[in-house]
Length: 424
Ligand code: GLU
Image 1: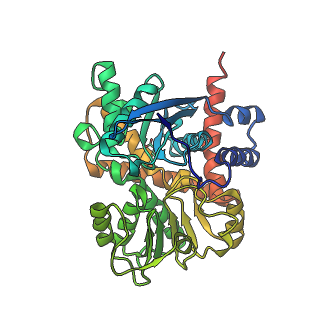
Image 2: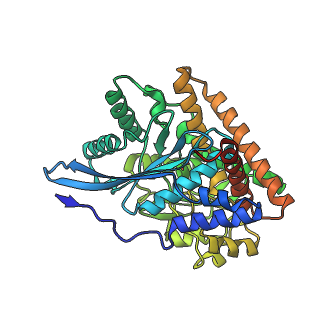
């Protein structure tokens, strides 16, 4: 048996400390009762499980898995499951807390949760991935459920993984339970528009921000870091809107073309080869150089803490759209604030995914499915309303968009907690 240890991590700062500090800053700005801040600063429940998997070569490997519920004051907890070698409990806790704020800001009736397994999904065969997913699901089966805690995809997981979670849970219950997980494939009760939803929500936020500045997306220069679910669709949508996507990247390579990357070709290349490496008509740069390009919009859509106090002063973008969760650290926030960079914070910019997850959950419970145009129109309503509320609060109170967005969200969760009362 081999126990899998996490390798060198991409996290330089403790993300849960960051999340708790953000909460304290926001609570001060919005005058929230310290008793409530103490409640909201802690996670309701954190479960750690070991996940033994029979590997294809016959040996057994033991992976570590987590599922954390941060808060359920506004409804069952909601949030993705991440498969990545750097996953830590504190990372999952921070991501769970951010899910609580994200759902509250969007006004959807969920609390926040997150899960993770310490593994490198790129190095697992499909059948190893399936066995790992089914065993992890069995280990957390008492924690999840349609009225309790509803997982979804995140970094390193996709519709196939959700299908195995749905099937494992349903087999154990003895009937299909559509509402246990979202981000399912369309053939088994997924929602039209869910796959593209996170990027679509980000597009709506950028469009609304640009409109406030009396500019338009056409002709804007954009750099997108990450070419997974969020980055690839965001690059595609921005390209379709007439923006010039000058740089893209994935975990293997970063590519630059000042005249514009051929995004449809990149999309096809990634789907076929599972990497951007080898894409033609683009110069190879580093991921760090991509972040520092002279562009209108920079969209970090990969992992946390890529813009830090080490590089923030050299960022040249005028808008940063956080497609990933937590890509900008608080010390970088302060530097960018001074430079006048407009940051569209994660809980606003990447909330499209969980909004359409909510639609998928509703459709699953009702067994009645909507057309894609309905899904996208309702997504637009919710994201644009949240954008306007955040923009107005930021301008009225003269604060950054992040503080406004988190503040509105924390206020809503605090109100729900007060209304319900602390049990017993
Ligand atoms: N993992 C996504 C996020 O960070 C989606 C969560 C969901 O759909 O529940 O927002």
